Image (cartoon, rainbow, N blue to C red; front, side, top):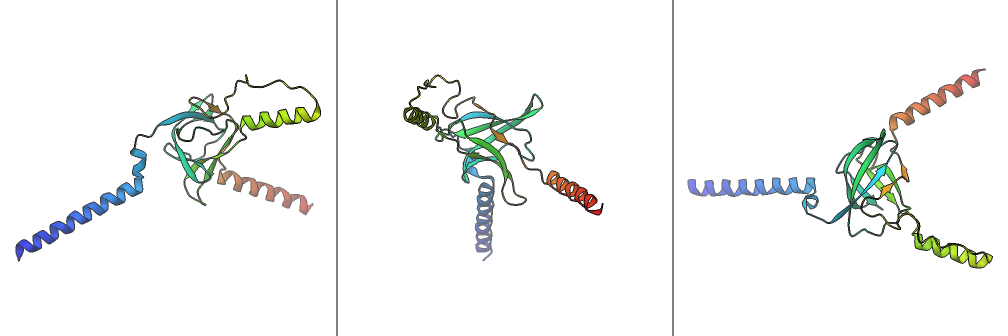
Length: 182
């Protein structure tokens, strides 16, 4: 009888430990520990708000990468972003903006897809043909077509800081009350 109780308690403890380990891996997103092939781009923001390293980078709600680190360069936040190499055709004209999941959720970088430069060249060529004017081919332009290793994105939108919005609202409503009293 005593041996049977010990075996039952032992099995129960093994199940509890396995359950705790499972929950730990689920919460920490164990897929981030795998060695995926990535390429690094950089983004310059005016304000990163509460953005942190390891925050996700998303397109349409799908995680495509993570923030590697955030530094200060020339008194502007400089964000290093690791993007999974399977997403290698993001147009270089794309916009990065800092958004918040829900009202008080984590902050992440959202990528708003830009226009592919091949499409722009086709549109320019079509308009030139219709108008009868001759245009030069911009194939030798300095900016790459897609995000690539070491690319720096300057087309960014900073984080919205709630305290600043509340202050602006209070300031604007206070000044309108004074003008109405006169």
